Image 1 (cartoon, rainbow, N blue to C red):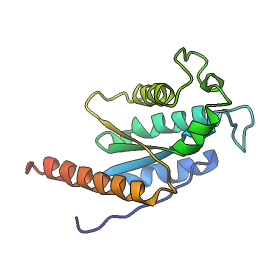
Image 2: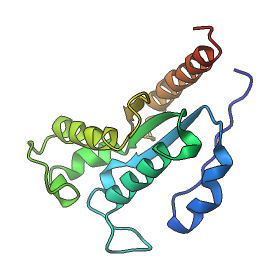
Image 3: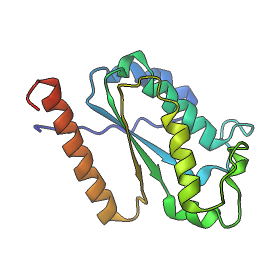
Length: 161
């Protein structure tokens, strides 16, 4: 791979329309969702849950005409804070339909299913990773696997894999 450019576009509603079309023909999108924010609201709209808004944004990007064939990588970040918060706060705050146990594994599996269900293209795979950005070894390992996935996707696109 000759080069890899990473853009942090931010997520505030007012900024989205300015950038989404600028990334046509990118190889992959890394979407970071702070799963620990399931009980928080947006700064700009105190009636909207942050996790639900993150899922709406993910859905709009994943299904955008600009990214029909773009690999999607979902980093469910702040897993350490999520795990601690689950001891005190139910994920039913964001997901009232959740009926599973209040455990890390069950809760994360449910959230993964919710994100996966937002993908309208059955041909597109969503690559999901639970992350803690302060764990630099884990982040490096995941980024290495993401780079490998991008290389494989490019080789497949060229008919070489």
